[in-house]
Each structure stands twice: as C-alpha cells, then as structure tokens.
Amino acid sequence: MHNGHIRKLVIAGGGTAGWMAAAMFGKHFGETLDITLVESDEIGTVGVGEATIPLLQHFHECLNVSEPEFLRAVRGTFKLGIFFENWRNLGENYFHSFGLVGRERWAAGFQNYWLRGRRLDLARDYGEYCLEASAALRNRFAISLNNVLNYAYHIDAGLYGQFLRGIAEESGVIRHEGRIEQVEQDPVNGFITGLRLQSGQRVTGDLFIDCTGFRGLLIEQTLNVGFDDYGDWLPCDSAIAVPTAVTGSAHPYTRSTAHEAGWQWRIPLQHRVGNGMVFSSRHWSDDEARARLLDNVQGAVLAEPRLIRFRAGQRRRYWYKNCVALGLASGFIEPLESTSIHLIQRGVTRLVQFFPDKGIREPAIAEFNAKMQDEINNIRDFIILHYHVTNRSDTPFWRQCRTMNVPDSLAHRIQLFRQTGRIAWNPGELFGTTSWAQVMLGQGLMPEQYHPTVYAMSKDELGKYLATIHRQVEEQVDQLPDQQQFIDDYCKAPPF
Image (cartoon, rainbow, N blue to C red; front, side):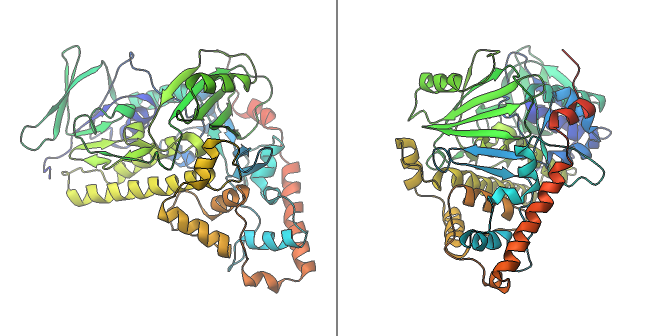
C-alpha cells in the first residue's frame, strides 16, 4: 500500500504507448498532475503495427481530436477489415470485417440461416451479406451524417507518435531527452522512486508507467514480475518489416497472406505501403523470410528490411507496486488482428478509470490486472484460432499448428460452434460474435447443425430473406464513392 497522494507521473519511454499515455493523462490530468515523459532519440521504436481497430475512434473522442486533421498528420487511410489469403487452404480467401453480417434474429445468429441456405444452394459467399466486406472489396468508402460503416485506420505509427506528442505537450507534459541508466527504488518497500539518466539527471515520481518496449526496464528488469509465454500456441516469434512505394489507389483493408512458415501483411498509407513477414524462426531462417517477403511486395523498396524478434505472451502483472506497464512492456500477442494499439488504449483508459489519486491500493491493482489479463487471453484465443483451425498440411509449420493442443477456453469455443453453430461470448470481450463467426467459417469450421428456429422459414422465405439482405448491401455499396476519391476530398495529406 502506498498512502501518499499521486502528484508526479513519470512515463518511461515514448513511441506509440508513451505518447498515447502522455496525451490522455495530459488532457485529463494536466491541471492537477505533474507529468514527465523520458525517452531517448538513440532508442528506436518498433512501430510495426500500422493497422488499427474501430475503438481508436473513442480514444480520439476523449482527446477531442479532429479526424481529418489526425488522418492528414499520420497520412492515414481507412480500414474496413482484413482480407485473409491462403489461411484455410492454398488459393482460398475470406474477409473478416468490422461490420455485422446479415441480420440476426432474437434466438439465432445469422450464421444459422446462412448455413441452411448454403445446404439448400440459396446462399452466396458469407461476406456478401456484410456491407463493410462488400465495400472493402470494391474499394468503396465514405463517412456521412447517417454513416453505417464500421471502420478503423491505417496509420504511420511514427507520425502518430509525433501527433500525440503535440497534444501532450500542449497539455503541459514535459519531455526529457535521455537514456535511462538506473531505476531507483525505495530500500524498504521496493517502490520505484526515480530514474537516473546517463546525463546524471534524476527524474523522480510517485507513479511510473513503463513504455520501454520488449525489455520492460521497470516492470521486468527492475520489479521482476515474470512473464507467461504463449509460444506453444503462437509459433511466430519474428518479423521483417519494409516500406514500399505506392503503386496505385489504396484499398480500405489490411491484407494478410499466409505463407509456408508465417504470414505477410500489406497496409496501404497515403505516402507509402507498409509490408512485413511474421514468421517462425524454427521453420524459416531470417534470410528465407526476407527473400520471401521481397519476392512478394509491390513497388520500389524504400528502406532496408528490418528484423524484429518478439515473444508472444504477457507479464504476470501489469501493475505492480507503483509501476504500470503499457504496450510491448506489458506483453505482445502478435500483429495478426491489429490489437497492439488497442491494448495500449485499453491500458491507458483503464488506468485513468483506476487512477490512484489518494494512494495506491491493492484491490484496485488486483482488479486492473485481472481485467487486462482476461482481455489479453480472449485476444490470444482469437489469434490462435486462425492458426489452429485450418485445412493446410503442406508444411511442417501448418501441420504443427493443426495438431497442437490449444487452451481449454478456445477448445470449448471450437467444439460448441462445430457441434451446434452457437458462439460462446461474454460481454466486454473485444471480438464479438460476428467476428468469431466470420473467422471460424472462413477458416473452414463448419457446424454440424444449426438452430432449430431456422426451420420456421420455408425454403422460399429463406431464399427471399437472404436475397433481400444481399440486395440491400449492394444498393448501399453502389452509393459509396471510391476510397481514394473520398480521401482526396476529406483528409488528403500535404506533400512532404
């Protein structure tokens, strides 16, 4: 227990995590809290994740951010979901959208009606009943007063950090440049008391946020909280990233292409394209992964490919004593479903909600940790699903993924869907029932039965029901402009 009032907040590390925290705390506590961020220009940021999910819009609302201003600053484009290629089988694709698919009825999800329609040869591809998926694959996008599209962004992570830094410093956050040489602790209770920089400067505080990346300088190297490794379930442990020149109009989705020992991302921005290969070092050498990536990019390569090592897993405690870990310092799953920035956002907003103004209390720490760990574990299961439920057996990597044991929580979800068509879901989980249905069906998990209320519709009624939904989706997509046209009118970034 720490009974003193929290008056000085110190953020160790910049990057996306550090500046998201600085911007949020500066905006909402800048008048009452002394906030300092320490970062070194000598230490680069990972900055691989340039795709987001829709909840980032809520974060920006809390900061009163203008969307066009933000998108011009980060040279961003829009994202309606992820196009998965070769994950189920070589040559087979599916789309995981941010939108709803079809129309649910009170007793049964839409997938039940689609499954019966499929067996009766009445149904189209599952994604054709989703506005976001259909719009994405036709490169259509718009925002209007009655907008019904659920969307996120593709962003330049480095530019995003600079954008947030501007917001933070306007709110009174002080940045100290320098490399942290020593983390000082109270000899009695072990609480962190200050950071000593190479210059000899000492930065003291009451509460510390660790944004030092994978090394976890405060939370792990100093406080030794421990790490739960998920490598047995998530076999990829390396990534190679490279930017390329723009070769055409940006499409409003992230592209994820499965390869022999991992998968490749393609993320279009206004000024360049982000590319990368996520792979298992047990199945591919760095040179093999690099060669495969460079053989499959479009446009001129703009920089030397960069190798990144990572461990899938999470810290056993996110908050310990007077230190809270955010971003890569707290753990990492992998970039497959673009959850890294979201987890920073959840950690920041949850810390605002749990802020220990009048002293640190153990029950609050325990609740914070439990909520963060539950969220990570739910995301972990969703990511494992992509690897485990597949028909691919063409390489040792995919054979390992198909046959590996999975967490009991995921095994239950798979069995429930396979046997009944129902989806296990708890309120508050990031990925909703629509996401689970899209990925399970997309990966080839077909239920053995569907909900009996489906039989309340005759064959003709079911056919009209499915046809009406599809027609309405097509009519809405027809009214949308090309994404590039919308970007040019709404948020086109100025030239460098």
